[in-house]
Image 1: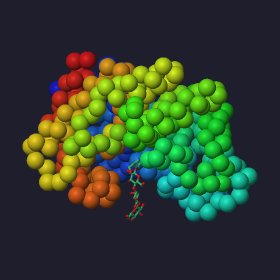
Image 2: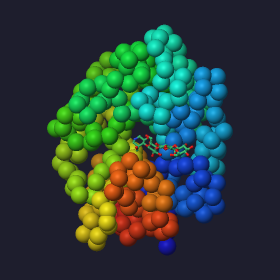
Image 3: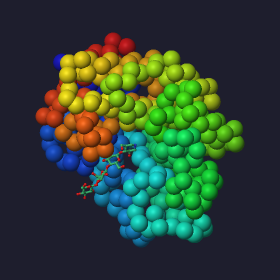
Length: 317
Ligand code: G3I
């Protein structure tokens, strides 16, 4: 039987996963990653807390291994992430001075994209910068620099590596006609109108099995970003189930994975990335108590029935 990788490569469909260092080290895990995915993103190690834990220390070792793994397996890479309100090192969380914050922001982006020039297909320059109420989030970058940090981040990234697609990524931004979805669109449109270098948007799509995909609102949203000349990526897909798992809930989960994949194929979404492949390493139970079974491989890393169907859908597309 064909592997997922063979199928997606033959369709030139970017189908990927968020990985941890152990996914590349453990021979069984790394084989699974090689056989299934053609684009990778680091689940954690490229966040500033890990990448630049102090102002003068850069932890290049893990990202270097990821870049090398992707290169030797002819995979593409997503970068995640520079500007975020979470997982920052203390020297960033404690910034107070505006000029210093600007220096740290520009230096971080420039260092990373200079070292890895030409290596990343797309990069989440900013992540989750809009709050659930539609306002710009009051992150450390907002507090110290003000809203100009967004322009600065994208401009700095473009200057450091003109070849990487620059992405604004968020969650709960996938539907047109919602407070956050519309605020996200307005922010992006304003960047485009002012010629700030942005190439695409990311919909994370951490969704729940009990909430069916609102296909019309999702397609309408994709369309309006395409109309701005931007790409759309599904960047962190998982479908959590309220435990215990039942056949009905699994069927609902399957429908959501299939809907998202079908829409991605039909709307020519730029990349479709799972936020983890196996329930064994899932971030879900730690964040959403009582939820689990969110990923397409079981705890013992065998594909669930939905995964075979996803492969067939891509193969027949
Ligand atoms: O590294 C420490 C380890 O030393 C310690 O022993 C262990 C004990 O809890 O914690 C480890 O850190 C954890 C880290 O993941 C690395 O495993 C943190 O506690 C944990 O909070 C952190 O969670 C990550 C989360 O982002 C943080 O917000 C998840 O793995 C990661 O999947 C999640 O990813 C985010 C995306 O970046 C942005 N979109 C939402 C998505 C899900 O929350």
